[in-house]
Length: 255
Length: 253
Image (cartoon, rainbow over all chains, first blue to last red):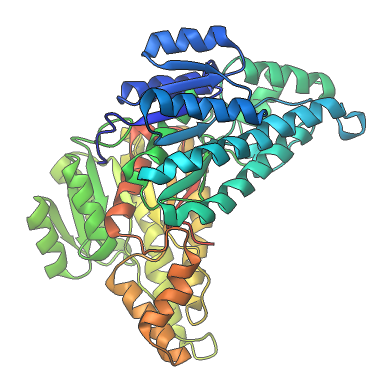
C-alpha cells in the first residue's frame, strides 16, 4: 500500500533526540532523504551520520533561520515532500499564579510560532508536487493538565493551526495533520514527571502509574518509535484522504 | 505494504463486505495476504467478493446473535482463530425526519448499526484475546437532518468503541473507530439525492455546496482510501493506538 518513497525528501525539526530522532531513523529506513534540524549541532550530527542524512542547525522560532533551513533543503535535494514539525519545549512546569513569563514566551514562540514559521516557508516547496505536513502535538492539546498550562496552551494552538492550514492548502495537494501522543517514554517524559511531582507533592513513579499506565487501556507508556510509525502512516499515500486530523496515539488513556 | 508491518497470514472478518467500503476493505486485507471472511446479509454479494479475493463467504445478519455466533465459529473452524474484526456492516437508516420516524425503522437501524457491532465484538473477543488482535469499527460523525436514526446509531458506536477499548486493552486487543467522510459509494449517492429532493436543487449543486466546498481537498473520499486507513489501524504500526477515532474525510470543516 502506498508508493515507494524513494527520492522523497523529509525535514524533521527537533530531529536530534527523542521522538524526532526516531522519526528521522524510520523515514531514512523507508528510503526518504532526511534533513534533521535542531538548535544543538552535536546530536544532529550524530543522527545525520547514522542515517546518512543532512544536519542543519536551526531555531524554529527565528524566521531567518527557518528560511535558511528550507533554502538548504532545496539547494541540497531540490525538493521537499514531508515536513515533520517535532521541535518543541516542555515549557515551565508550575502553577499559573507562579508563572515564569519568560518561560511561557519561549514555549509559545517555539511550540506555536515555530510550527507556523516552518509551515510558512515549507508550503512553497510542498506546493510543487503536493506533500504532507505532520505536526507532533500532544494529548495536552486536547485536554489541559495541571502545572502544564504553557505546554497545553501551545499544543491546543498547534491543533488549531493544523486544521486551519489544512483547509488553506488542501486544494494545493498538501495534507496537514497532527499526532497527539501521550505518555511517551524517554528522558523528557521522566524529567517532566519529576517536575510535576514536586509541584503536586507526590513522586514521579506515582504519577506515571496513576495518571499514565493505569488509566491506559494497554496499561503501558508508549515508545517513541510508535509515534514515528503513526507519522510515517500520515506521510504515506495510505493517508491520501486524511487531512486536518488530530490522531491520538496514547495507548487508549481515559481522563 | 502498510507502514510498520505486515498483516500477511492474519485472519480477518469484514462484515458487510459484499459492496462499497466493506468490499474495498476486504480486497485491501486480501492484498496484504490476509485470509478474509467476507460477511454480508446478501448472499450473492458475499459470494462474489469471496470468489474475487479467494476468501470465505459468510451469509448472515449481524443483528441476530445466533448468526454472529455462527460467523465466529465458522471463522475459527476454518482458519483456527481471528486476528482482525472490521465492523463495517451498517444500514443508511430510514432517511426521514424524527417526526416522521416509524419505530420499526428506528429499531432496525439501531439493531444493525449498534447492536450488530456489539454482538460481533462480544463473540469475537474470546478469539481476539488469544491473538492480541484488533477491532476496527466503521463509524460516522456527520450530523445531518433527516438522518436521526443513523446519526444516533453511529454516535453510540463511539461510546461502545471506547468502552470496548478499555475492556480489551489489558488483553492486548486494540479497538478503534474509523470515520470516513463522504465516500464515493452508492450509499452517498442516495444521500445526495435525498438532500437534492428536500432542497429542490440538482445533485451536482448539493455535492458542491454540502460536500466539496466544505472539504479541504475538494473531493470525495474513495473506498480504497478508507481501506488503507483500516489496514493502518489493524497493523503493528498502530500498536499504541486504541480507543480513538481516525477521521478519513479529506479535511471536512
